[in-house]
Length: 145
Image (cartoon, rainbow, N blue to C red; front, side):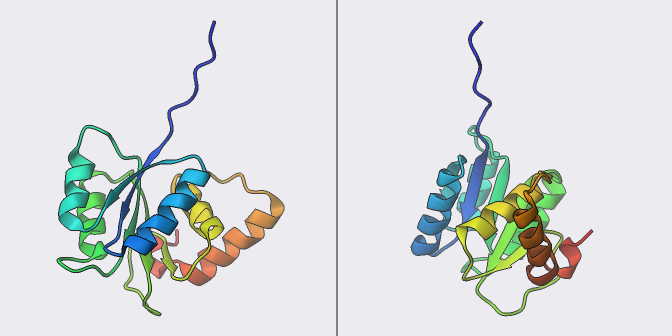
């Protein structure tokens, strides 16, 4: 019997900045994720409702034509189990029900936070220390459980 490779998770990146999308895409792909990209809310909604399927989302907080907070609220209403991570270049962020990472960040920080959003909690001891630091320093208060 042939071994079946597990399905790769498809992560939607929502950001109006092409450079940020490129860096996030490269980090996600290196970690083994498939990636779909959207430049704003309208494209994000199309991707989320599309046939490809999305298991997670990394969204910018501030975008022209509507912010990531609106998108997160909509996603939480329709797909409460979707893994979501929010990125912001702002030094402060609103109280959101998802992890918020402040730019600039490393690919490792992003992947660790996304894995945490998926409920994967099997870090090495060094990853555990960094995860605790990320959780306490970078996540918005509403995301902490």
